[in-house]
Every structure is written in C-alpha cells, then in structure tokens.
Image 1: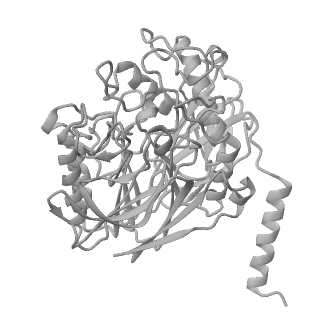
Image 2 (image 1 turned 30 degrees about the vertical axis):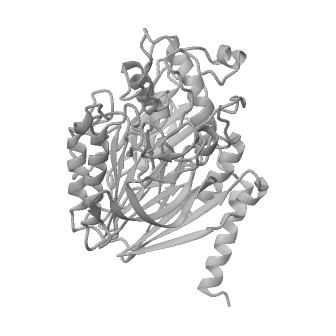
Image 3 (image 1 turned 135 degrees about the vertical axis):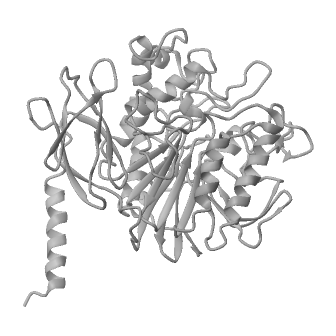
Length: 521
C-alpha cells in the first residue's frame, strides 16, 4: 500500500525529473527581476528584440500593459496592484498579440502586515558586479567570472529563500569624471563607448553606453535566475559610477547630476524600485518620483513579512552631506523613519540593512569612522582623515543607540560594501554603553570579488574601527560567500556560506554553512 509519505516522495521525485527533462524556457526574455509586497508585484524585464507595442503581463486573470523604460523598447516594467496577500500568482509575459514571450512562472506576495507567519527565509549578499573584460593591472581590481558568480547564486537559490537582498556595487565602471575607467584596455573602451557628461542618459549615445555596461554586469549575471524570488537591490557608491574618493581634485559624493542620472537609469532598466509600505513616508528623499511607479522609492525600502520581520533598506551614498558636525549619511527624515521602526513593538524582529558597513573599516574616506590608513599601511586615529565628516559618526551613534534600545529584541544590522564575511556584537560605541543589548552586525559576503579585497586595493584587511568595542564570532574574512537568515518568532538564525578561488569551482554546488549564529529574542 502506498502511504501519503510515499506518495509525496514519489511526486517530488517526478517533479524533479520533469524539471530536468523540461527546463524553463526563457524565449526572447533576457532578464526578469521581480519584487513584491503583501498586495503588489513589480517586475523589470528586458527582451532580446525591441517591441513597438507594449508587451503584457498576465497575472491570474488580469492583463497588465508594460511601461517602456528605454528609448528602443527592449526594457519594460510591469506593476500589478491590488493583489491578495500571501498568494502565489502565475505570471506570463505576452506580446501585444497575446503570444508567449517565455514560459510562465510564479511569484508569491508577502503575508498581510497583521498576520503572524511562523518562518521567513532571507538571502543576502553584496558586491556582485564586475565585467569579465576587466583586466588585471597594478593596483586594479578583477572579478570572478560571470559563470562562477552565477554558480554561487544558483547554490544560494537551492535554499529556497522567500526574498533576496543584493546590497550594493552591482556595477563597476568608475568614471573618475574622465569618461572611461582606466583599468580597461582601449579596445574594451572602444567597444563599450564613453559617456558625454553634457548630454542626457536617455535618448542619446549615453543610453547605448549605459546598456552595454549594465548588460555585461547585471543582465548577464542575474538573467532569469531570480524570476520567482522577490528581490531588493540597494545601491552603493560604484552604482553611481564612481568610488567614494575625496582629494583636492575631486570629492565624488554626494553624486553629481550625471552620476545620479546613471544610477537612476540602472534601476529604471534592471531592478525594481522599493514598493511602498504603510509605515514608510511617501515623501522620503528618492521616493514618489513622477517617472517611477506610484509611491515607490529608489533609496529607502522595506521588506515587511507580517508581524514576524521588518527589514529596513537604505542607500548611504546618494544623500550624504558634507556639513562637518551637522553632516549626515542619510537625511534626518530617513533617520527618523529608521528609529521609529525600531521603536515599533508590534514586530518580532526589526533589521537594518545599510549599504555602508558599521564596525569594520579599511581607511576609506566614505566610512562611518575617522580611522585613517597611513603611508605604512597602519590603520588608526593618529592622523585626521581628510574630508571625513564628524556628523557621520554622530548619526552612527544615534542609530546604534536606537537599535540597542529595542529591549525585547536582538538588534541586527546586515551591511554591504566591505567585500568580506564577518559577524560581531557591538558592546560599546564611543561613549555609548550598549552591553545591556549589544547590536549584532554581519557582513554577508561578496559574490563578485576576486582580488579587489580591501587588503588588495587598500593595503589592509577590514579591521574593527577604533570607535567601537566588539565581540566577534567571525573575524572579517576576505572570501566569497552569501548569508541566509531564517526568522522564527523566537530567533534569527544566521547561516554563513564561504568559498574562495583556491577551491575548485565544483565545490560551490555542495556548499553548506561554515558558521551558524543564532540570535534569540
């Protein structure tokens, strides 16, 4: 007699076999990246061939016309609203004559804000950008091949996350305001082209250059891998086509007009804006722009999974200010939103995800901290860091204080940018004693880095800044990897995965966590 367990096992085996014999067909669709909330799905897609009439997205029994993102008609966005919470929706892309452009697929909306789900799985990684054509040179960075990066992402997807966060540095094509990045050979620059800062991005030759950069680093990496996973992309310095540098000749941030237009163009074409949330003001900087879907944000976002978890996402580059003791990394309106969310006692877990990392420093100008790397490669506070703003550190401490004040929860920050894997509990930040409820900070691991580690490009590994006292369960490790976080009502389980180019690429397919850190309420 076949038991129910036998039947389920046989059904699962048959489903796997069926998936192996009939893989999902992308057709003419080159990339699909969705995001979701409890009532909405927003999709970005690009096609191999331009369309003169808008394609359609079939969502259940509804049909939604695409909004064109580029001049030619290859890039489209689709905004499905008024959906039911916690429901899987069958999606299908069709041309204007209702002919399929690819196979159907499924995206599930998040649970209703007031519901009480028992589990939520989140995938996080950082620094996935990089062009395969970038050649090694003295002092320059290279990146893992696209195929290796895709293998890491494919392994991460086998753990079936409910959502994904790609935290910063999706593109590396730093202009230094000269029009072409110096690490590239002349033939690559000729093939891609150079930007003209006096022209708009769209409707000019700049649009073609931008697409050649983005398609080599975003479209070729993600393709259709995350078509069923609500995805959240935070932008960091390189996503505005510059490094965070400050010299007598050039201070790169906040981004100037042309850098901002390049960064906005990347989001418009490739990855979705942040959907609105009832507790995030619609008027925050970078939100509710007239050329974006209604109520969405570009710089600050929310993942809300019932009352189980809320994840606050924030770009630390676009709106930083150079106002000395009054300088900020995020505007005061954004800081007020973050602190108000940490004060909301109706949520089991509240997590902050900034693009710029607390705790660790490599002496870069754009750090929260004043630590300076001297000519001997020593990181410390013996010399003032030029152009660094003391107001940044003051804001850091205000956010740390608000996090530690969540007395009934364990505070957690997951950051990007640092090209490393690490976890530490902050017990002191300057004069603040946080030991009653230490703030945990995690570096999730980079997907794209090869030899662009801090110790390769900056002559130092990531080190704990002098301003903080920490207890590190994982000292900063310069290896590739990703982080999976499992939320339950009573805890957050952080599972860290690691891989390095010294290992065979075949090892990626069987990666298991090398370290697990459980943070209980």
